[in-house]
Length: 111
Image (tube, rainbow, N blue to C red; front, side, top):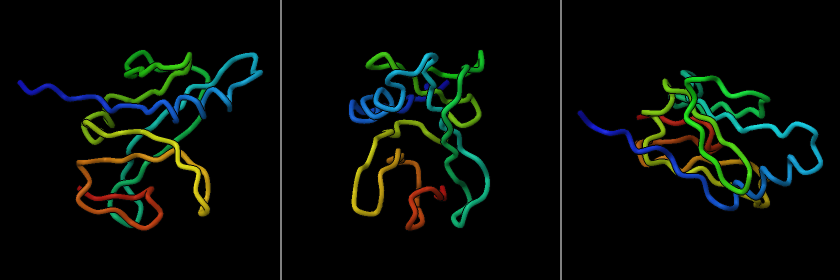
């Protein structure tokens, strides 16, 4: 039986999530899922949500939560979830060692 290594979340990503939730009555969690579609076969879906699903993997840091559903977890094995603030825009990004190719937007990938 092989063990799936969960993704890691950078301090920068947790810090940005803390900024987003600063002053919120009920802090939101960042849910990252992998769905079929996009120009390379799979795409990341990122949403801020109120509640975790009981089956979600919960990654915590800086008082914040990142959620991964069990179906997406194998696609995100050993990935790094980060926050990028560049000229092209500020966004959460997934650096995924399992992706054999990705499109220019960074949202779509193939395996």
